[in-house]
Amino acid sequence: MKTIAIATLIALSSLTALPALAQTAAPAGSSMPAKNDALFQALGGKPGLQALMDVFVAGLKADKRIGVQFKDTKAAYLSEQLVDQVCAATGGPCKYEGADMKTAHADMGITKSNFHALVEVLQVSMDSRNIPFATQNQLLALLAPMHRDIITAN
Ligand code: HEM
Image 1 (cartoon, rainbow, N blue to C red):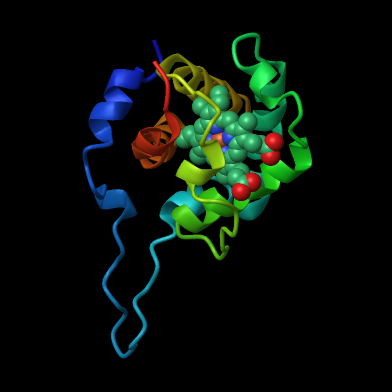
Image 2: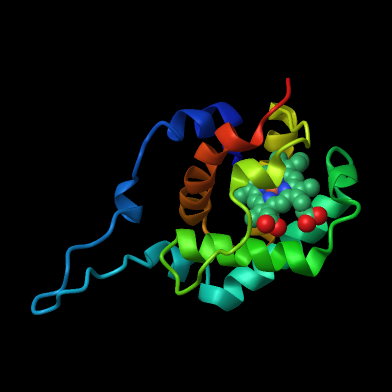
């Protein structure tokens, strides 16, 4: 089975930094630290992320389990926020200016199963974009710790 269980994700989330996501050393002669954008590049850069998030948001809206939670969401807006958020988090040249995850999801009553369903939709979306499994897991490991701010209900 190619899916990664939510328990694994939550276990992974106790890791503070994965080696692949850690910043590389500054290049010789430079006073600026080099940014490790390997994951951003593996996701296809900004065009890759845009295509992925469009598929992902469409998948969320269509999902039988959690689609209702996105019924009033403007797809283009959420997709854009996700592109900026993931681009910035994976070392890409973007700035995320949306709400922090706690504020954005407050009062939504999001459960662990809701979170798990969203992760599954993301996995299916990444499969449909032919994103390699190792890259998928790196992105999921980056997002997993956010469950602490997003899940607010049993
Ligand atoms: C790691 C998991 C998640 C990430 C990275 C994430 C990310 C985001 C981002 C970036 C926004 C936009 C915030 C803004 O507009 O300022 C957002 C909004 C939202 N999220 Fe999440 N989210 C996650 C999980 C979930 C889950 C599990 C649900 C419910 C099943 C959910 C439901 C929503 C809804 C309904 C909105 C508002 C969209 C709108 O109408 O504008 N999110 N999320």
